[in-house]
Amino acid sequence: MNEQSSEQDALRHALVSSDFEPLILVDASDREVGFMSKARCHEGRGVLHRAFSLFIFNPEGQLLMQQRSAAKRLWPGYWSNSCCSHPRRGESLQLAAHRRLWQELGMRCALTPLFKFRYQAQFDATGAENELCSVYIGCSDGPVRANVHEIADWCWIDPSELQAELQRGARSFTPWFRIEWMQIWTQLRSALPRAQHASGAWVSR
Image (cartoon, rainbow, N blue to C red; front, side, top):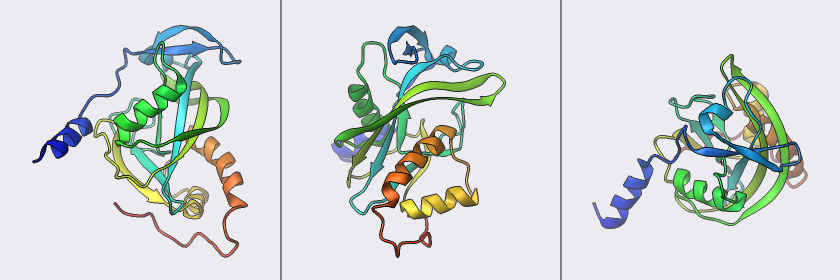
């Protein structure tokens, strides 16, 4: 194994998150009001905190999707957008988004903000998401190096096929992804050729 391959393998197996890391608590206007551990932020109905979601497309227009690790406390094994996480105490959203993109997927690319929204989603009686989430879009044709602690599987998928998957209910998707995709799909739809239809398949690795 050469030095580069050894480094990539180490990154794939690195622990990149902890239940004890402090997240940024915010009010409805996204003003910081304090800090709390990730574990406590997600207990019960959740405590409102700052978060981000990334949508990475390749030059062919396919979206990178990930299946969440079975070890996740919330929505394990569900399919979701390319990457999502939280800025840490003293960390900007942009810095956090680029950090997590590298840690989780081994990718670097420019990220453009799309929109921000607030949501609360209950997973079970003891855990939930309660986030003010900023959504970013990027484009990359680089290889994917998925972190094994965060990601069970991944794929590239055509937007129209993804929309068909959502409508068929063939797979389980995270609630925040469904909300985000509704807005992104509305924007994408006008740019897709009329002849394009949902007849593709999930693109294998």
